[in-house]
Length: 345
Image (cartoon, rainbow, N blue to C red):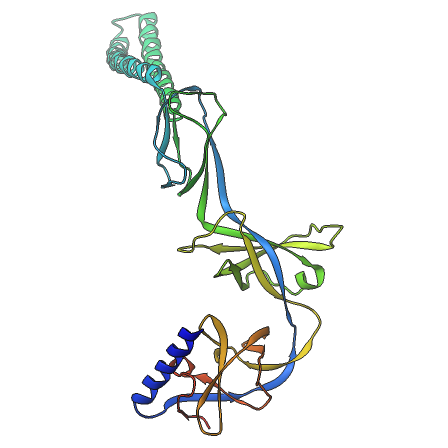
């Protein structure tokens, strides 16, 4: 607290030292009705999470991650032994090469026999045999290609890859272990996107609008979140309904299952002091407004937000009264007791 007072005093002195009052615009506090805010507690969940499983059985040959690692989409996390498959692929490629050569020769023979038949130098049966051999060789090439493709797909499935960028939160396999098809290998979560679930009464849920943005508090952070769903599946005991918000976490560090808080409007209206939203700013970790006294000096007053009305905000604070002159423009440049000049008076 002492540090804050000293900092405020220093900033005020520096404002005086600059010479001349700060230029501001003001408005008067008015009274009006507002839907007061009610705080709800919910849970943060990561939007995308996946338990990775082995698609083919085999011995785990290499593991390319540790618990807590950040991994990129497509990274090979686990390699299951594929030596036998690789040998089969090599043999299949060799057989395919031979079959292609045979198909080329069969096609050439067929073209020659076709000309000979036209000149009646060979019988119809000899021509039919050449045609059958050419078609069989071509079909054999296609069959070998399909077989090679199948082996390559099986070999690719021996590599377990990250389906999206995220963080490994579970590790269920060790080097040299036998992995059965379908057995869990690891769990990955996308920490860049989160969803919040809150259970609210029907009268609150009815006042919400999908697509609107809300401030959700997680620990000491405020995360801008969009309302994406009002789920019509209520709890019969509490008579509440789940609402879902989604947010991009970006650089914020949060945990799956962490407590979250949001303030939403209730139906019952009450009288409150109303200001434009621009009048309320953050100072020293709290919401404040700057009032102008009869000496044209700025007075900082901490406020509590009661509710929102379009572009206005309803607040309460010690010393706030209807008709008081409050700074709406230029408040980011002034400090307690600094002189101001009102441009729009």
